Amino acid sequence: MEELNLIAQADIATANAKGFVSSAVVNPILVDQYQSEDFSFCLREIGVVTPAEAKDNTIEPPHYLTHMEAYSIMLGVHDGGSGLALMPLYKVPQEVVKKSNIEESSEAQAKIVVKLLGHIGLPLGITVWIDIESINALSSQPENKGFTAEQTKQYLKGLSDYILDSGFSVGYYYGNTANCSCPSETQMSASNILQSISCANGLGENQLHTISIGDNNDSCKIRWAYYK
Image (cartoon, rainbow, N blue to C red; front, side):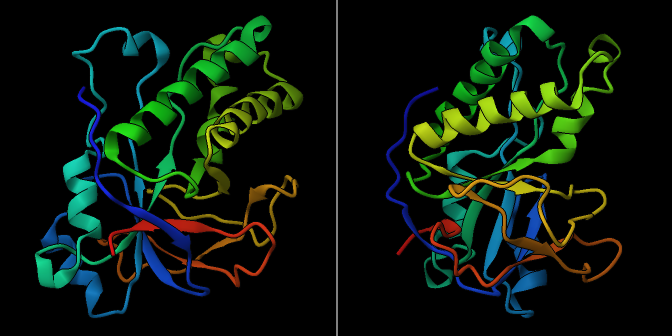
């Protein structure tokens, strides 16, 4: 895949801004449903393959986020775009992880995420949200049944550390695109990890789940991408 240089900027997310979550392509028809409700951003699942699948360049996850879609989401309404800010949501692919190889597996997965963010053209500094339910689901895989809570936490830490070291910030998303279920308080704490995102009721059972930014007044703030 060719590296693309789209000029997107990172900025502090507006406190209490409303947004929606999508695991599929966000097109103008979909956005029209939300613009009248004063939505400001999209939390878009980026779609990531496993390290084994990454070796085969012909394998692509369904509905993965492309640079063209990201451009369309962030481009101003008067220029033909949706005029929304964008943040990426990373749902961990379900794979076999050897307990003796957790650190290496999580780093290999994080490298794929960071590389994809570069291909999409998203700027450094924005918040990458990790779907915690997909992390927890790893331990329910038949081959991973022996995973302890500590090993699951170790896998998550490996992902987070690599993404942080690559110049992004990290948030923990406790919902999913099928059933929004964010708790009021996070289960982990770290001064450089962003956690203040809350869920709200969807606009309708056939529409996407909506979310909102919290006060966003911590020293480490949620940041989104946009085109000026």
